[in-house]
Image (cartoon, rainbow, N blue to C red):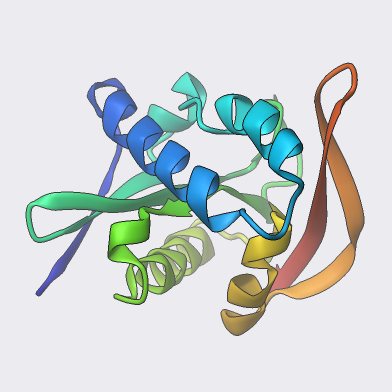
Length: 166
């Protein structure tokens, strides 16, 4: 079966949120406390308008189904555009559990690397969930340090900051 990787639009909001919720709600189990996940997944699974319209956030279609999503921006998470365009950030990557082990996320990362290199990016950064650290290492990222994202007061989500030199 072939993969199609295409930029998202606002019309893809529901598909992206479906993938994010299914992925995060299932694949993070065992890495995080159930109570933390129940409270964090609703924040994590919201499609961000700025990403959907960035031109560098993608859906990976496997056959007729959107099976993965993700992308990159030079804006840091939180939406602040960086002056240094040689550094990019991997953003909101997820694979629907029904499409695991088909190579969708790996193809997406390769696509992001190629696109970003063409734009002059030399370094990638990402905040990985603890569940995704092994995946990011498999595509060349290195652990930098443990971090945490605060979704709201009292809701702090442990992550791993990772980096990759292109």
